Image 1 (tube, chains in turn brown, purple):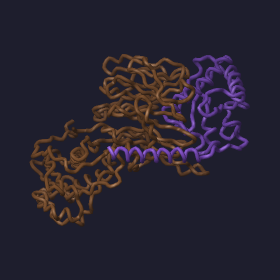
Image 2: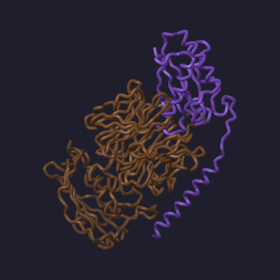
Image 3: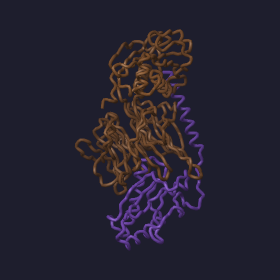
Length: 446
Length: 161
């Protein structure tokens, strides 16, 4: 159980008063901050010990690459070529020669050290403001060696937080549906990976169709739709133990599940006699509550972060639109009024926005609007894309995109993509197979 | 703040360009003889439960209303089912790929139930019919064009035993 827990044992120094370099994440970043990520230094003994345990030649350098890739993917930073670094990692970590780093136009510098102590991995790192010639942050962690990639993610989170003033999203995972085979007979499995695509693990075997996995707030449980024994039902899966169970005994299809923000309930649709309504089930006492009661389709429910409101998708107006209601189902209010159809509303973890999929004139868009429906902004347009999921800091959305097939019906693909809330920094998220229905975890450590 | 203004302006430009490109796409009118409106009327993918009893009915985009042809097909199924009272069926409801996954699951369920209701009206007992929705998960035609989509918007009657 403690495998995923990283101990922050030592806080060396932390300057809070100086915020000399700042990265503004509220706008599209056209000039990412030049940052030098020096390879973390390591003594010979530690290097060979880690090589034995992890089969990695230079752990310090590998961790720095993790950090560097994260920073680059964020679109806010421009990690500089390591070839141009003049100062050796171990000396730079003690006292950088700031002139050297200024010379290569670095504005910020990350240095660090990795050691093996009692078979544990100990990392310390520092963030330097090159222009002001000052240390901005210094931290150390101790963990099991196999957690080395997470150390890189945590370093990135700390650097991101120090420079942007907001929590990062790097020490996180994404759960998604891995897809293989022809479009008419797709094989789908639940897959989980680190946010940067590493440490991929399949959670189901592909014997039955699975869809729409979503994390609970502690990231230990997943709720999803499975067609086990040809009965489409909402399931609950414990990631650590692998134990799966059906959520409730509904006499028909349950789907579109999500956890409540406190993790105590699952909210979902239940379809019966051609009508889908929204229900909740309390996971402790198994009490089922009906939230909507309308002859239209009500689906894709998502709670506000305070648990007081629910946004959902309904075609009660004749077409798919987005609605908001109180958690007990009262006060239903339509919020989407633009041209086109709206689906898959998801409440932002910051509470201020709702992300959605929009279909208009044969194109699909991922967009956001305020919770009262005002301020609609479309972030990206494509042939087909849907199902946005928020990064835990509410700055990035991950979604999936499908390609058009050719005349022969070939050339289909489904991939994960991410885009910043600003509409910039659109990137494909690398997955081993085709992928859909991504769901972003919260931060694994804080 | 100036930055936020710049940001807003870039967005306006971005929005404007999105709207412009959206307007630029002309609506494709399907001229194929295998469709009426956007409901599939061909026979390509149809299988037969018995001689002269087609197994599936087709729907318009976002609709679950049974067309005249669909009602005709379902009456044939009902009469065949009345004669073969030992047979139970599963109605499999489907949607095309041009809709969000969760909504399509609901839509598939609604379509299959439209067919179920009609069979019941024509004397097939409810306990002989079960319903399952596959949403957009099991297309019969993998094409990305209006004809393929029309074949995929369907409810298929399958023998359960």
